[in-house]
Length: 587
Image (tube, rainbow, N blue to C red; front, side):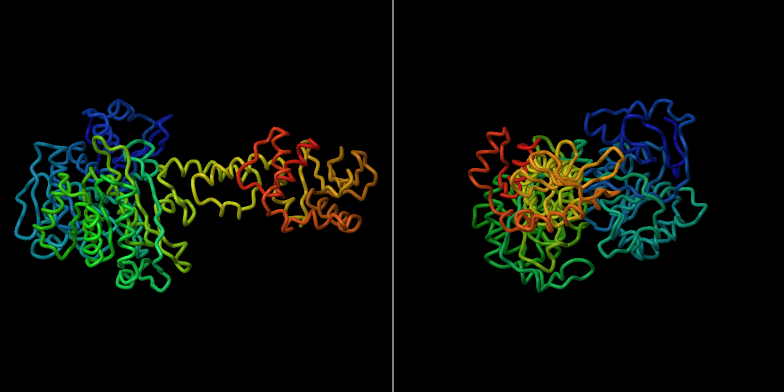
């Protein structure tokens, strides 16, 4: 494959592949994913063959952003870049020193012959093909000027949502990245293009050249499925203020670092994920230490890691965890970004958050594939809060499910697809929006789908429902009826002129015509007046909000439905049963 201009973003038609726009990173990503998934060394045929014809359109974009979920191998993708495109020198910038050696290892695994230098503290590079640098070290003079002058091709920013910080922008300006005629490529790699403080990345990056969601990556097989459990605690979050979009950590720690809640979390792990290797996320050091103690009391081999520990101690604990010498590690901020241990198959979120970015980074610790690993169990601890209820992020809400939804151990991506199918059915059937508030478990989705499927022919379109406070039924012949007793109905039907006429019918025979309307809602409004004026004794039974309609269906109603060949769904009400019976008796 010929080398490409490093700043080219490529667009082409990939036919049935489902992707219509790709960039330089699509080429690299496709190759690296294929290599990891199938142990092949060649790029996909459509990338190596002569597709670079008239279909290809190239646009110069010097500052690109790659957005992939945590665990999807962003560093692996970036490591393929210099080898694939033939650039002699690459600068890879990280924001924490622990991430340096992971990046070095990744570059060597992808490109065994590459020379990799390090810029960190006393360590300096000396002309290596790849240099991995700590931003804290490289953004300071005199090192800044020395590193910036070395003629970089690609400059890769790890965890690129940090790139708008002053240290990064100082480095990028010195290298010349922001100059219009710069000939290299700035590539930011991140799990999110949004920062927790709302600051945009547009001052640094021009375009998101490639992006995939967690759901897409799970369904494509690049991340393992997540099975979620919701554990409800009695701790209240209502008195905690928000700072920069998330909870004040001092106040949060006081609320959640309690003996009762810590015992609940430890019990949840031992009952829902026994034997799994768990990363447990805590609010502060005291919380991590207390929770590790509770886990040990339950026989779990657990240790706490945090920023106050010496680097050597942290490394020893995490290495023991990686080798299987520990079952669980409680942590504060250490495992959130960049930590790579594919063997983790349980994530416990013991610290509530309103930050989608933070939550995505946390659950990403457990979704990387590994030999023998089929899924990752995610345990959310849901505390009491009216004030913050809709802002709290859990595994279900991360995927767009309602607040308080409990996956009950089901794979999140499967439940999400089921929920979306149900939502389309509800919308197509004119189901009132408030009905969706009843969906709090996977079983609720299936129950309501059955219920709506049974009721959708008896239900009327939203514009008809909004025109009356009485219950009108849509019949199989597209007429609308309001039953007023003794085989008498008020009927709305369309005539051959396309107008809607309002009739009274007795025993199936029209007995009076009350008028015609140009629109169905107007005819329903006229019919409603007829019912109220001519049959006032029926209004209480037809009233939508009548209390009896919400009561459970009677045994007689359920028995009659079964005789009619209808299996009543769980939770069927008297009003719903009445609609079903009327429709089938008259249909």
